[in-house]
Image (cartoon, rainbow over the protein chains, first blue to last red):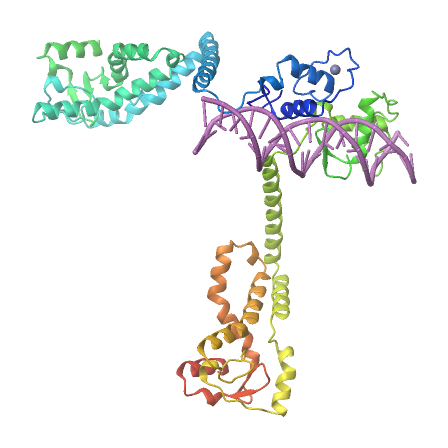
Length: 251
Length: 251
DNA sequence: TAAGAAGGTCACAAGGTCAG
DNA sequence: CTGACCTTGTGACCTTCTTA
Ligand SMILES: [Zn+2]
Ligand SMILES: [Zn+2]
């Protein structure tokens, strides 16, 4: 058979072979015995060179009037076929990923591209704002619990509810960026869904901290917020947790 | 290949080349190596001068037993080919029109020819009737609503229905003439169908008035009808609309 | 009812034929 | 040997039939 994906006379076949076999059995054609020892290989490209061997191959692969199956395909079998297809698909993808993982250059390039495309805090993206803040600094006061580069308005909000709401709004895009990044790491998508979630839960905060490194300016010992304002390193020394994080970032 | 338009061994070819190539591969003929450095150019007129080079060219353009395509041509491909043909065709037509529009002389000539061929009221066509009317004038009375050169029998008809029917019958050929004229204006046919309709709707009446100019005889201040009868300019002064049109035509 | 295959149709091209 | 004409096989699409 050639291309096409329907089942004819009990075998996956194409319109051409289906028609050929139909004609052969309908008219009980006796093809001229092959002149080449009946051993012609029947490929897509030369399928019509020897009718005798073509019919022989049709029979060999199981085409038969007795193998026809009319009507709709049972659901179970359909599911089985679908599963097989997906298995084949997954296998080929896995193969491609393994090939990529074998090539360090490609892996590195893929990771760098993933980072550049999904991180909003790369040096080149932050640079303009940082420059602006250095030449025209505006310092902000902010309680330690709210001290984060992602907080664009470092002023206390009224009400716990509002605070949480605001925080998640600020974090969401950054976290989505990290998830996007992970998904583009070679092989990540091939892991079981569950493992993907576990890995992300475990690593998303650390990755985020690394990504935010560009917002911490060691030269001036200040932290840049998304609104362009600055926060001095010493301003948070009253809170143990915040100080620990601060020191970790700067040193 | 030479002339012909069928696909043989994967290439647009003719019966001759098809047969030649078939014989060559069937009998595995080894042609005498060309005596002229195997560089004969194969053209329609000298194609049978050197078999060696002919076969070489056949192979060079891609003729091969492996390239045969059996059966009917898929619809998609057919549509694609048709679209390509039409695209090429439209492009060449557009080019021709642009060239014509660049040459004022040709444009003028085309427009004049279009007018002469599609207008039934040119001076030379009207002249005999006008001459007849001048030497032997026959005046008619006619209500202002029916006063039109296109009305061949300027007498009141009985019934509104009949009147409308009659009017459209008189106008149809004249309007068809204007449409014909527009279609022959260089570039008009290349406009989108919709725009053509819009332009015609907007302009057909004015063009028609200009075309009918020859039916208005300023020397005698009369209007000639298609039946050869005359109508005096003053006869319509009772109707404002008719008078306005009359005056526009005469002055 | 509808998915899905057998069977029919016929444009198209391979291969055969034979006068030039 | 060439190539116009003919015969025959191929397969893309369509219709008809069968079964879940
Ligand atoms: Zn064989
Ligand atoms: Zn040659």
